[in-house]
Image 1: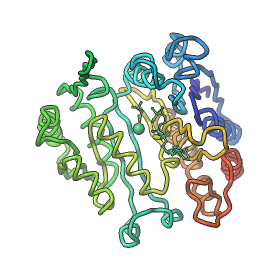
Image 2: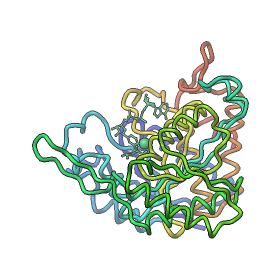
Image 3: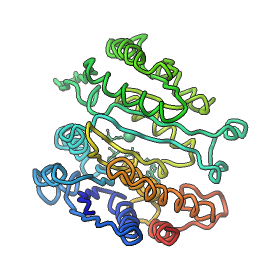
Length: 352
Ligand SMILES: NC(=O)C1=CN([C@@H]2O[C@H](COP(=O)(O)OP(=O)(O)OC[C@H]3O[C@@H](n4cnc5c(N)ncnc54)[C@H](O)[C@@H]3O)[C@@H](O)[C@H]2O)C=CC1
Ligand SMILES: CC(C)CC(=O)C(=O)O
Ligand SMILES: [Mg+2]
């Protein structure tokens, strides 16, 4: 079968990590006899430099005509002084909105073999962590009305009941396939959008009587994540809270370079990207961990293409590579041998 994949490498470490993920996917194609067809398109800073636009029309068109999109990351200091709408990051938001990818699934799992890289107390680490953050991706403060007038600036957090309902359903369905527990995170003590969020999530919960629901304010949730991550199964939350909480959760697993994500809409189409950014501080140095992007490929095989065994194969190859002691700089302990981005990709390909 032929699978059409749009590839957006982006900026900073984007090209380095995506190259490793493509290598893995090509190997999977050979092993399982699948025809993965790649079309590379531009978005972000590199698109600004080459075309003058952060999201050229051709990019959006190719994405719409593909079965899935792989994205590295966009942005960097070179483009930081541009106005909001012209920045590389705006291209990512526009892609998510245009492709109606309202549901961002961010699993955060502590691998046993990496427990010693977790900065938390040993007794907390011992409990482990296996959570899925379900982040609303096309609403909230990132997409609300915004303007600057002289010395005043405004960003509105906006949500409709419909937007909350569809992400809540997604979270409850995921919880049904796991440990049947949803924690909804909001700031309902001060935000109108959060009060609508909480009320709507409670209504949706009635359709899932087998799933336990509790609510946490986001400040407490941020604290609970480092005090007792084991209490969580599925966290559902709005766009910005999910963005921040998932970066926090990543460090409990050992590194932000480990966490993948799937951005999904109403059909099987999806955009797959690591949760991290373009990491300009380490770009071009072979220091980036490609595992988050490689695990995003694993999510793509499962969610968009329905290839569960192939998805498991990648996950197992990553686990074996880590069990064999291979470490990029972000997950190496003092004195451990450090390998490069490309070496990590090669070893994972060999494990497949
Ligand atoms: N999805 C995307 O395209 C995203 C883009 N950004 C953009 O990326 C740029 C940099 O943002 P930052 O706030 O620095 O966040 P970042 O996630 O790029 O980097 C934060 C820290 O994590 C490290 N890091 C990130 N990915 C890593 C990996 N794979 N392996 C090892 N270490 C890794 C970086 O070296 C840095 O120290 C900004 O322009 C920002 O807007 C930020 C987040 C997401
Ligand atoms: C442009 C940002 C909203 C990207 C980001 O930080 C993310 O999606 O995690
Ligand atoms: Mg983020």
